[in-house]
Image (tube, rainbow, N blue to C red; front, side):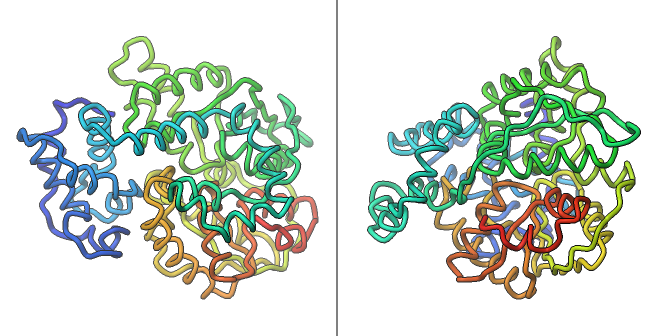
Length: 428
């Protein structure tokens, strides 16, 4: 993500003013300067000046969520998103991790970006949840003793039902207004298949032919945001090939949409792919972003429910999309939208963060759950599968009976006249 030649200019943009401090989740938690954006930039400068990456330096970089709240709060335009991704690539190249760290990271990166592997896990995981073994294992604490990261993976898994199978094309209802490609994602497709089904239905009801390539794979978001550049580029090239034939790509996962809009930077140094990457980034749209621009056509039926809307970091900070999902929700009759305190503070999911930094992620998840619960809402609406899993887990710890849904699922309930019960009866 970016050339090493860019690094001195990017680092010098920071004037160490401190405007980022109140928005940085780890600084808010611990008040440690080196766990703030400007502290980490100071460490990046040390490394650029020749200081080798040490264990403590890497720990401060690993503790960063990459939430980009500092980017939107910075008056100097510091591109911290590029800085942290370049630094993480340096860490992956230069820093020898422990055997245990390497094993956990390989487990995550050899599983979550691969839909077939996740799909193979669905059946055993569903049986594990239904059998009651889940409760016994959690009470025993055996997974925590094996690895906190493994325990976090098990704890975050949502309750799994049957996965509806999507066709390769969903026809527009009524006169066709657009033809769009739809990214189904990895975690979204296997852990939240109902979100994809609702997304396709809503797009069709709003007059879109929806093209869903069967052989699509991971977009590369997890790898890109973890410094695994070669891996991310391979995923990006495959995604570009899958979607080059469509004019618009609609993405319902904030992290995936953000990554795809960054393909231009990711493949900038590859002459054979840079132009194709630029074209794909230019036609990628978040679900709410696309629908808000398209405008409503299908009739909205009442959904009498109070919702709290959660700003996913890679939607609000990385893509700048805040008003569109709120406007889509507010247009549904009898639906009330309530705001969550500290919306700029990450929930602790942050891609793989809640797996590699489960203790810090747990603190942030609990903080978010308190703020969500305080709204008095019956339903939390989030636009990223990681956020949904993270906040649902924290709400369960708190004993709060708040259901969770994606913006697409709320719109689907309204357009099909399903009402409130279709949403608040959800258990994940």
